Each structure stands twice: as C-alpha cells, then as structure tokens.
Length: 314
Image 1 (cartoon, rainbow, N blue to C red):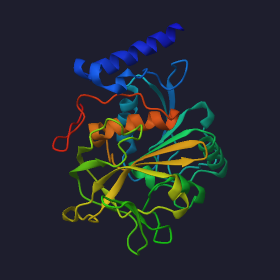
Image 2: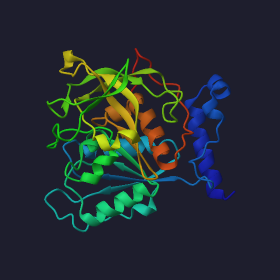
Image 3: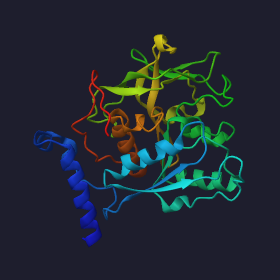
C-alpha cells in the first residue's frame, strides 16, 4: 500500500474511532465493513461543490458543507463559485470528469448548453449528484434536469409540472393530481425526520425518527410523472398546519437514478447552523458517499438524534 493511502486510512480510522464508543465498535455491523471511499486504492472521493448564485446564503452554508464532508477523512472537496448573476456565464464549463460527485448548493441562472450537456453526460455515465436545500428547486426551464429530481417547487412550476408527490404512512408514496401552490415553506421550527427506507444503504442504522434542529420545512412539492419508477423516498417530515404546513408527510430525503448515475436529494439545511445539525450531517455525508460510489461505509455516530433530542455540532 502506498504511503499516502496508509496516511488517509489512519485519518479515516481516527475519525471513526472518535465517533464511536467501544460497545458500538464491537456490535455495530456497519463498523465491520472496510472503511474505504469505495475505491480499491483508498484514495479520496473527489467532490465538486458548486455555489455562487441563489436566494439562500451559500457564502455561509458552503464552508459548513465542506467541513461536514472533510471531517470524515473520506472526501477531498473543490469549491467552484460561478460568476455572479449579472456576469456572463457562457464560459462556465467545469471538468466534471475530474470528480466522483457534484454537490450542488446553487439555485441561480441556467448554465450554458455545453455545461448542461457535460453535466448530464457525467451523471448518466455513473457520476454522483447531491442537491442541498434550495438547489432542489433549480433550473425550472431545463427539461432534462427535472428527471434528476424526486420533487421540486417554486420558480414558475405549477400543476402542469406534475402531481404532488408525498408520503402517506398507510399507503407509502402518493401522487396527488391537484391544483394549488407548487412549493411552500414553514417558519423555523424543530421537526422529526421519519425514515421510510430503513434498509437503503444511506438509511441503514439511522434512527427511525430523529429530531432536526429548527429549520424551514418545504411542502407542496411536485414530481414529474416520467421519473416515478426511478425514485426512492428515504425520509419524510410531517408538515404541521400549525406551522403553515400541508398536513402531509413531505419528502425530505430521496434518491433518483439517471442512467448509471445516482442522485441524492436532501431538502432541508437552510443555512450554516442547520447544516451542523446531526440530523442533517449524517444523511448528507452518507448520501454523498452513496452518490459517488453506490456504497455506504460511514458508521452511525454516537450523537445520532432521537425522536425527542436534536444535536447541533459546534
């Protein structure tokens, strides 16, 4: 084994040992898996984190997302900030093939055709994509991009986009063809993330119910009918009418397959503090590993939230 790989493995091991008590190290089957990035040579998962435009404070959240990933020792993150909205985007063309996964913290102007083409080819060819909070609402006029999304809203989307897609505890995934707003959000409040796919690699071992720190809760989101067979709903949250909610269990974590590629959506994580909530960090880092490799080896930390207790890391 090359020296740099040994060094990376030791950093990863220290990270995981620091998270887990002895009892968990012995009993948790996740820890018995080899701690790697999913690559045979133990090299880092290369992440391209794109920001630069949007209605949310990406200047605050991007450093936190980068920190969440790099604390694991598994990821090397490159941040690419687009030109501001009033500047020309025609030369924007990332070399996606240099990376394993793209994390999108961007909800701004549409990319030029050459960037769109390269991006879709990257995903379809087996690349990974992670969409964080408002990035799930991006590019309403880019038709092919919609196939990457389990649900979306706002930005001119209406009931012609597709039916409401949500979760019913009795029926599972539901499509409701009905007029009304496409995208609403609550005020900041704590809410419970309910796992709906406990055997999925991202969710395996995560608490069935974990309390998230005060955050916006998106609701009344729609999904295009064409991609329904490619969607897996991983977790939901109840959108409480007392907080101007829909009264339904709204999708908060989901995956979509696109060609050979894997897409992970995390709908919450409004700003820096919310992105340090353990209810955000754990699915985010595990979802990013899954999107990049198809596997998840990151163990469940000791401070995983319960239904009654949330945790926010410093």
